[in-house]
Length: 184
Image 1 (cartoon, rainbow, N blue to C red):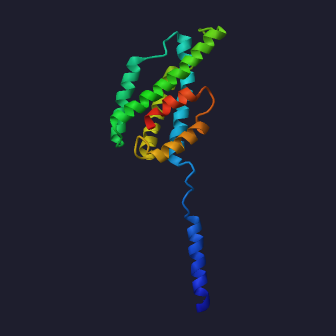
Image 2 (cartoon, helix red, strand yellow; image 1 turned 90 degrees about the horizontal axis):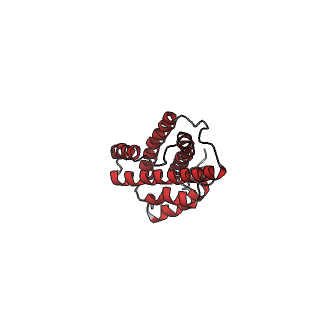
Image 3 (cartoon, rainbow, N blue to C red; image 1 turned 180 degrees about the horizontal axis):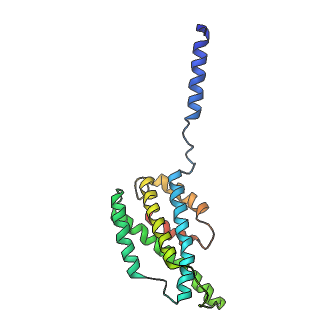
């Protein structure tokens, strides 16, 4: 290549490389937060199926023994991922409470509609296996998000993304706020 073309060609390479390495705009949702929100949504949606099982079996929404066992398990698994066990307990307590809000809304609606309790509900063992799987994925997502609770600038991004991701299927503002509260 003649010497007079070296500098422009080198400059063109730098411009092309820089264009491909541009930082994401500040308002773009971080992938880790979207993954976390998507998993929270999936766990909340399973609560509707759990409510159907509990309704059909005449069981109460709250299961303190199962909840206590789950909190101990996720705290230990979280510790293995470098997460603070108290934060993990707080986060999963919030997930369970948000799920119970959904279940209570389902119970109230079914009661008002006169729904028969004898209708077949989903398989509880399969539902619990799905929740356990989601809990492990949630722990991995929490570890990937970074420092917890989130710093102020990431909280705003989380609030904006949560309004979009955690919308519908009974996930109202109260449920969303409860599920996300430990992240603030």
